[in-house]
Length: 267
Image 1 (cartoon, rainbow, N blue to C red):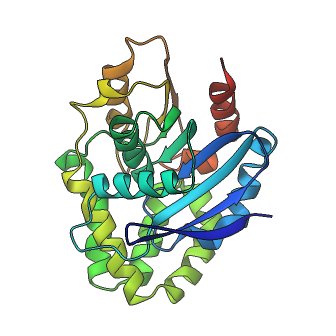
Image 2: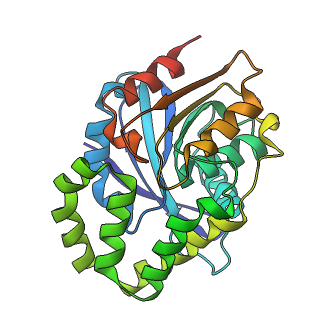
Image 3: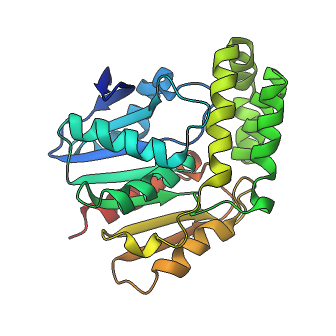
């Protein structure tokens, strides 16, 4: 069963969960979420069950108290600091969506920590045309339209048939989202606007697997293709594009984890 913990470093307090018993360290940095993913730790453990024998997995949330001007670079620095505090190294790193943005920044700034990195449905920078969905989420959160935010979030990250399966869950979520969670969501969502590592991608030293989606209504498939354009000259770069699974293909594509494991265990 997944265990939950809190690590502190330099005034930072960050929650994480841990599961698996393998000798390799696998770190998951989840995407932008309305509520903490720690409430779903057992579901996450179940989703990554095929990795339990080869990896010890850590899922990190964002720090507990975030300043109003919290940037993705700050998130990367804070996450790297707590990973160092925990003695984690030679990390197999997976970042989904905003978590992928953090993962790229960590791989660029702290290459000594990362052995391999998987980037899922993410972007090295978000152009104005790619911010429309996120900006709409921000406006709904600022208006405290919990129902509108939760359902729009679900509709954008999942294909229609998957959203229909989960829409009751989003309805329940809307009833439980607090004002503090909405304020936190706005800060985290705004951080995407000024993020740009497109000129630094070539500084990533470790092998990279980029997994994207052709029809990604949140960040657009061009985001993943931009990563490929910068790294596909390297023999240790791999790209796979999904079709029909939505932005959250990391949740919906049945072979997603298998592709990751194959890449991570490859010599």
